[in-house]
Each structure stands twice: as structure tokens, then as C-alpha cells.
Image 1 (cartoon, rainbow, N blue to C red):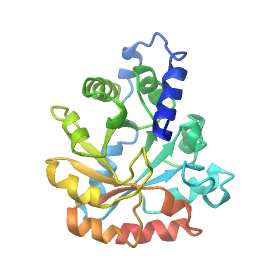
Image 2: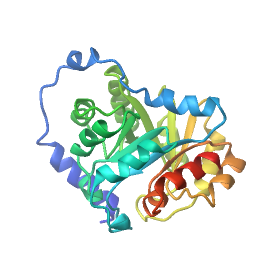
Image 3: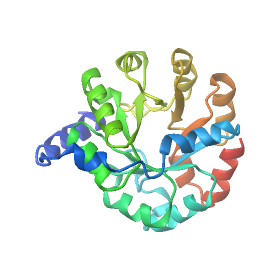
Image 4: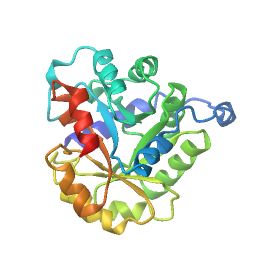
Length: 256
């Protein structure tokens, strides 16, 4: 069993115990607090890179980014940098939890996206409950009907949505869904291999969307991605977390 299948199985088993009676009207009264989508659009409108800086303690390929101990130290640097949004990875396989969103909201007023393996409505509601401004939906682990259902629910309760794809088959899953933000994951989630050409190739078939290139983006390759795809929005975790001076590094990415 590969790492993705393992995580999805864990999530499926866990969320069986999260089933709860949730009144959608309870959440519909809340307006969007930070406008995740608008923050990205604002940067693009002034011809600057829209950067989503990601926080995670570790990943399947990296055991501990620079021996991270305190989320507060990292998020304070993100807050002072030129990133427009922050991604918080809440899955336990990456050392995360929903409490990390709570901590982040006390440190920064930048919009926050919850990055996790969202597979049911309960997780959408808890994303709102913990104060995130947006959530990630991964096309690889969802059917087309589930993508649409979870996307529409999130929008209804005031969350922005980033739908992540990895190939043409997954791009077809999002046809007919009024999705504004599409992420292209340069990493093969099953084999954990990086290929930035995914962003370049897939961007050519996605029309009238804001495309975000995810995974493997660095100062050294961001210009290639921009030049060959026209993409100017990026979700970056590893290369930032490995860098000692995160503010300086993020600001270099912003200007690239």
C-alpha cells in the first residue's frame, strides 16, 4: 500500500466517528473573514507572484524541516513576509492538527487554507469551525460527484476552494464545476516524484481559471514555470521550510 492509499484509508476510518448532525444554516450566517481568493487576485492584479506559504512539520519524504519545534516561530516569519496566504497542513502524517489553524489565526491576519485529505461533509464543516478561510480538495481521492458536492458546500458556508489535480484524467473530473482556483500538483502523490513540467503542460488545457503550481517550486525553477505556462500563483512548502531565512527567501520568490 502506497502512502496516499494509507492516508486515505486512515482518513476514511477516522471520519466514520466524526459523523455529526450539522446545521448548514449555522455556518451560512458567517461571511468570509479573510477572502483567500481575493488575496491571490490582488497580487496578480499588480503583476506580482501570489505566494501561498505552507506550514508542515514533516512529510513522507522529509522527516523534520530544519528541526521545527514551534509553529509560532514559522508563522511569525510568514506574517512578516510577502506571501499573500498561508497553507496549514492539518493531517497527522505531516505532524499537523486542526489546532494549528487556531494558533495561526492568533498570529496572522493573512487568509489561511486548510490542506488535508478532505473526503466528507463533516470535514468541510470543521474547517469552517476552526476558522480557516479556504480548503483543499484533492481530485485524485474523490469522485467527480463528490468534488462537486464538497466544493458547493464549502462555497455555501463561506469558504474558498482550491481543487488540486495531477493529470488530464483528474482535469476532466472538474469539468462542469464552477471552480475558480485550480492547483496543479507537480508531485506524484503515490510515488512522491516531482516533475514541474506538469504545471506547464496541464495549464494549457485549463481555461478561465487561476492556476496554482504546487510542490517542488523553488527560486531556481519558478521563472521557468512562469515563462512556459504563464502561471504566477504558487503554493510552496518544502523549499521555504528548509531555508533558514524564510522572510528573505519568500520575498525572493515574490519578486522572481
